[in-house]
Structure formats: C-alpha cells, structure tokens
Length: 119
Image 1 (spheres, rainbow, N blue to C red):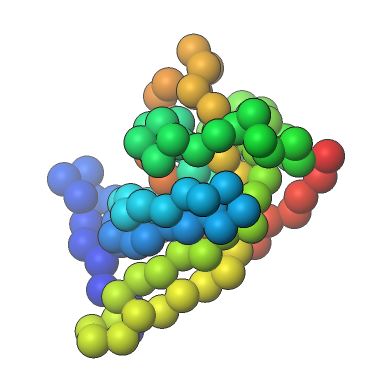
Image 2: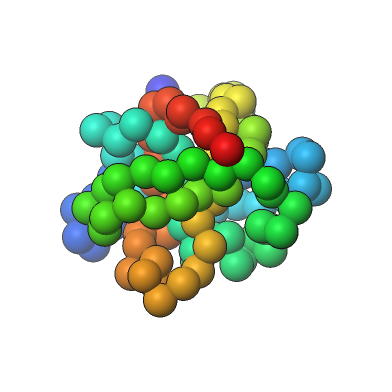
C-alpha cells in the first residue's frame, strides 16, 4: 500500500518522482490526491521547480476546474511512489500548467485518474 500524509489543511498528499523522458525532466514533488478529478496535472510551482520546457510541448488541452477553464500542455510521464520497500511506477499523461496571473493561486500538484488529450 502506498502511504501518504495529510497536510496542515487536512488534504491528502504523497511524495513521488515525476519523470517526463521526452523532455529530460525528472524530480520529486508533492502530489495532492484528488479522487474526484479526471486528469493528472502539474501546476506552476512544480513546472518552475522542475524547469519543464513548455515551449517544447506543442500538444495542449483545456479543462474546467474550480478556477475556471485553463489550458494545459500535454506530455507522457511516469510517476513513481514508494510502497514500503517496493517502488510503484505508473505511466500517465499529464497536463502541465504555465505560471500566469490566473494560475498563481493553483494548488501545486494534483493526482488524477485519467487524461483526455487534444491539440
């Protein structure tokens, strides 16, 4: 079983390794677990932390959330979590959000169940 924790606001969190091989990106970040979400998304704080090159990502998709409609850059990624002594790795598409005045208040990361891509 993958173990996480609750932050000071009571939100479920996991530490995980995000890798985007096509961009040479790899780094540990904190995931916010959102069981009602429909996609995995990387928000601006982690986009900047991992130096994800959005200019090298031509595929985009728009999604509606509590902050309104946002456009995300799309990439195939792997996410790895520790399960006791074992590592669990999942291949998932992710939506990566650039930092703008509208996105500066987004949560840092959300774990979601599926992702529909578009151009």
